[in-house]
Length: 247
Image (cartoon, rainbow, N blue to C red; front, side, top):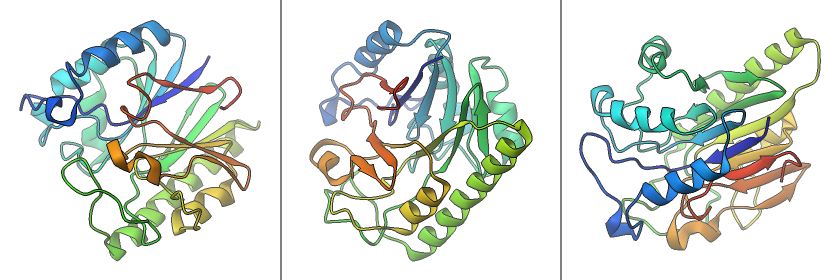
């Protein structure tokens, strides 16, 4: 079973919000072609947030059907534009229940599937971030209380992963999946990078960055963790292969 990731699918929802103004012509058709040609039903793929422009659960159903129709088993994560997501785990379970290819979602929790153990959280813009482009698809305002909250949520997810690994009685391949970059190209440590690196995952995948902001994220290896940016445009609208090899 191979592991892939893609972030920021930005599907149109019932609101019919297209991506042409951002230069994503005919989106999501190019992503669909690449996904269907690359991923098989035996693979696992992390969808790393900003899944849909929907604002309410009733607006997201067609987008979830689109995801369900793509090959592979999916693990979902919330992004900053996923207003439809909500904070109720039980409601999310009911929402996702009809979609048989969805094998889990991260909500203060971890997902164990096969040899993989995936923990993470949405995160937010860290105070260590360099200046980045703003706008609808750009960066968001720094909020100290969000940093504290998202660090706590990340730790809750990691703690759940540790419990799952202990119960399994055998080591798993640890993967951290987040939406915002946990560290930036300036290489400055953040509360997020400290927290996830202490868990020692093999790889950390993230999205959120687009266009001229793509270069702001840290990509490469640090403290034994390989950081991978998988936002849709950064990945050339093709799911990123994380393993075998874990990039």
